[in-house]
Length: 222
Length: 67
Image (tube, rainbow over all chains, first blue to last red; front, side):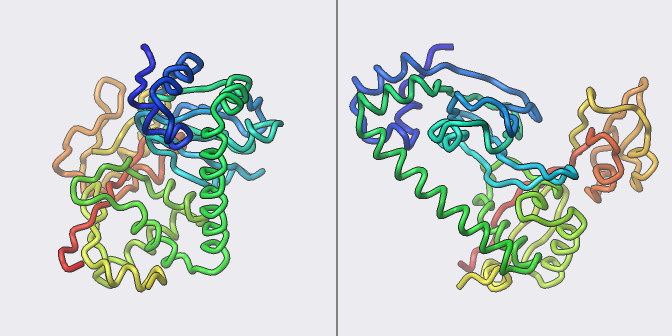
């Protein structure tokens, strides 16, 4: 499939570029598709390709020696993954898996370096993207260190909720547990507790936030 | 309905055995969600599957009009 340049405009890396710049960059970009559950990146593997999600969602995670998974980020359309390993050199620091059918745009490390030299705006955009990434990771450390499990579940629900129509990928309890660094059973108990407090309602395949104020209080968000 | 990955499913039937509402059945040697309306989304099938072949994902939405 030919690269759709209008989609490149939506990627923060390429923000502020003129059409000629986008067209020049598009010649280096190639498309990759994957199905649900497919492993896109392996922790410790070669890191010479930067990926941008165009359609679908990707989870970025680390796996402990005993097989426990900690989700670091969910990558949605416009966002990128494998940035740190590609820019820093070395191997992939994380694994990445498709949460459903995904379409990715990929850029080789060697081409990215040339692009940043030719289009300095891209380098500035990369700095901005990575700074935001650091801020998100600091917040994750704060969550894991200071918030109790039900508070972390509440915060995750608030961050993940879509408005009525639901435009986000669905999450299993196992995925929720991996995102907040706890066991699946704890997520189940926390959800029951939040339902008992009237903050949410659990229906078939849906978690409905019925009281935002109560959920924010549990999450410790003012 | 629960999402079943046919490639991971080993036809052990554990999910069918724990399904308290009869929504899951083995049809032609394959586990299928046949009585979809009966499924209460208890997620026990997801919990017991030894191969991660069946998942019960949640959509998370806001319905609070007070905010």
